[in-house]
Length: 82
Image 1 (cartoon, helix red, strand yellow):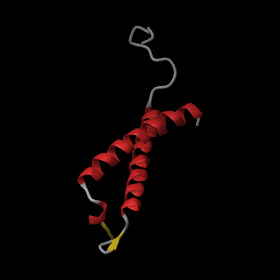
Image 2: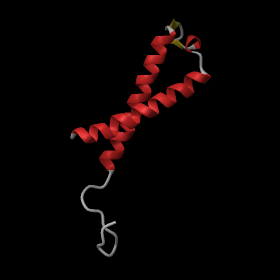
Image 3: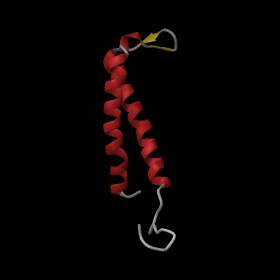
Image 4: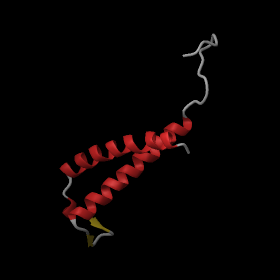
């Protein structure tokens, strides 16, 4: 994968992860979250884990978008470039 494609994936997903983390953790207190029913993690662990989970999900979405984007010259029905 080319470096600029990696930048197209990671930078927007980083911004979305930051916005999503801010939104989610404004509504949910990390100390109220229990894992597997009884394990309670600290606030910073949940903040960091949530951020990286959101970043991973957004990066996968961006990577799928780049993978499915048309390659090469895009033309209309009259063979004119768009």
